[in-house]
Length: 397
Ligand code: SAH
Image (cartoon, rainbow, N blue to C red; front, top):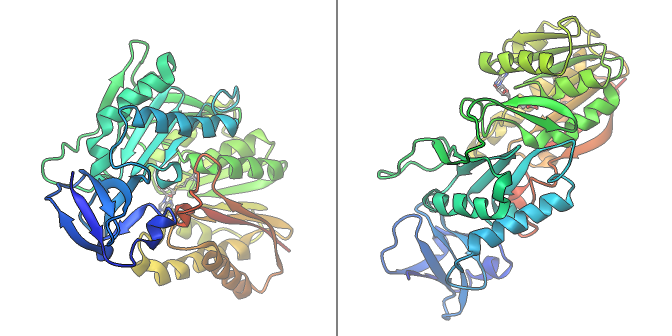
């Protein structure tokens, strides 16, 4: 097996169980690993540290084990069982109200580069590394063992996430389909609300599972309110608000496909067109034209404005502009639920952008709650970079 030998003193982060080896820490590579190969990492003094998937780029190795330089034959089964146990203990697997959740959250589940979302029996897999992409068949086999008959299908949706390399067959498709499986949109339940999920055509793995608890919080505050849901995707927040008795909900997204799913989800949950209006529009343009005071609950959940550090300053300015527009227009005594899912924008930086936005409007703003990602989007304590979703619930006087 290829050996990666680190520079002197560069083993400290691995000793603290951080799961990445940066290429700058590597002194020597003994062997000629192909990208995605399992390699063993050693300190300069020859001590074994970890094994993991080799990568070409700024991260050279993503660690799979700190204990052994080989993966046991049942490695995937054991790791997936542990991930499932976390979701079971969080009350997600086996719940009568919720049958969709994130089963594997990369480093958060000690499986760097792997995302698996569970949609009522269908596991949608996204490899973010060549190593995980090359293991997808083994992962699908392990899913069958862990879930048994409860597993209807495994869909690989890595074409947009696996780093492209010649020789990789980057075509999305099913890795497994049981006899009971029927293709097409699938209906899932989240906190008792019904949603259609289309993992083949939809964004990410099909649904934003990370907003489940924040949607429930919106529901707590939505009764009787005029709600505006900006960047609504398939209408997650909208359906919860309607179910909680909102007076009316307007949903806005620039994706026509997403808006047609919103309409289907509104109907699926038994709401009428009088209760809900869809707008396929740019959310920022839409907000600019909103009369002040029209809405008393506004949700702002934009896509990641910064995908890398270089984009940080522009992203912070964009968050500030967007939040100033929302805060200035919400009715007196109204609420703004505002989010950022940019990993490089930490919660302090985001709070500062929202603070600047509030100051710009000169309104009195109280922070009622600080919001984050739920338990199934687990954060490994040794890998704080796994924390990405943050939000604030604001009361605007
Ligand atoms: N709140 C959603 C998830 C939002 S993801 C939920 O609970 O499911 C971000 C969404 O913003 C995507 O649906 C994307 O289509 C949309 N989007 C991106 N840029 C936009 C823009 N300028 N105006 C409106 N929508 C936009």
